Image (tube, rainbow, N blue to C red; front, side, top):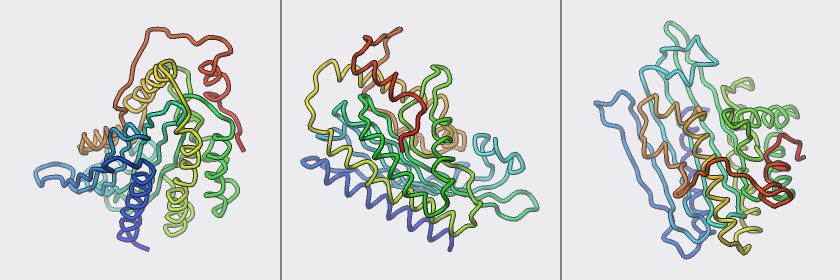
Length: 304
């Protein structure tokens, strides 16, 4: 197995996901493909392909990006758990996506799979994998949460019965807005700095997560995309999208890594929703569907 194999897999994954989502969002122009390449004068070298669908019938904005970059020095966001690699040259590649649906009953989803390699001074190259997926509903449904978590569990099961509980807990802890004391959504799975199975099996585990994404998300989209909604639901959706923006800009290590390393800002911030809103000290009515999101879904619980 090699870095070239990982790159080929990631490019194919991006193709598979964007072609499938374009077919789901029928009647639109599909994804706009924006290949990019860093200039030689920039500290970060590399290239990528950003694909964006905007103004669709199902997805108000759907972004799926591939990047493969090299840099002279790992940024702080990548070395907080590996201080021995501070200042090491690195290579990173991955596919990252965020889909913002139009219908408030369809949840926002995020998925990322990536590989990072670094060479410490006088040492051997170190390679690890990361990734996961998580679901952020505006209106919660038990069957959707159970389905999403079941697919995540099944994708990881061939690599050890401990992986899903461990990565589910990691996801709950990671996608948490500390300044709000609030979960971002119902979670999923998340892992980082992972190499304990060796290169081949760690790559296979990452690939299994990436390959399971469409199975985890599309049945939920199909169930919810045609549900009727009005201004009340739309207003709550935009308000909750504000929380999504807050997390990505304040806490997300991937966003910080991209910006700190000199990555392509337009591609890094493709995860932002097209519209969001904030309201001062907004409260939900007790017993309302909006209140149920906080009391039943934005809590850490076992779904499977």
